[in-house]
Length: 343
Image (cartoon, rainbow, N blue to C red; front, side, top):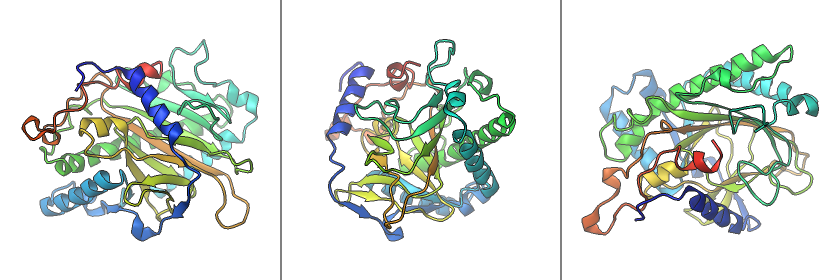
């Protein structure tokens, strides 16, 4: 293990790896039987008081994270009407004239908060790649030192409903992510409250994304792994393609009714000493039925520990005596991903 963490070198390696992945190989379409599905209805309704049920769920979560790095989450408790409102205001936002959206352009000199705002179609940010991403996005973030007010917001007549819905959804995602943490802890054989201190004041991003129908063969978002602890994805239709480590193929993930998709990010992978896999994935908004594709909307929520919390290898994920030492030095989000993303 190296004693210092070189964030830029790590980012460069991830980019080189991602650009070497051959996504033109045969692509499978998974069936619902191929997708790990975690039903947390009873766990959330009873506040995790059934220890046997909680342990069973944690075992399922652990298997999914160790083998493929993602799962479909049902029974999550996020109100369907809130999800519909989010999709509605997203569509209204992206339907605006380009010059209106560009008033919120990311990293404008007059905006002190970096990494938030509007990314236009065919941008090369998040992820940074040589080829463009065939999507447009609007990104907000929260942290102990970043409020909702610090983010840029639209000022049109409908902007109050847009902001209200985005903030409400962001808060609902934070609450859900926090409630899932004990399952991750149990799956990793540590005490149930292991992650509580790290996530007392979490850092997170919410990315609203519009993928126009793809006619030019360009990918909606280029292949990458998320740099988060975990990501929770809501989507209007299918389009997510993951690399399934079990079969060694790129696999189109079907939409599971009323489910959110949860995947492991690089920081959780590192925290677990590579025990959990950060899933390789991309998005393609093309039709698999021969009909013309329709616009796709997605809202990934990237959840991280407090930006200054130093993550040291989880004790149950390393063992010096059995030739499994920590592979990564202790690091915080602020000194890793935030450093290379200019935050």
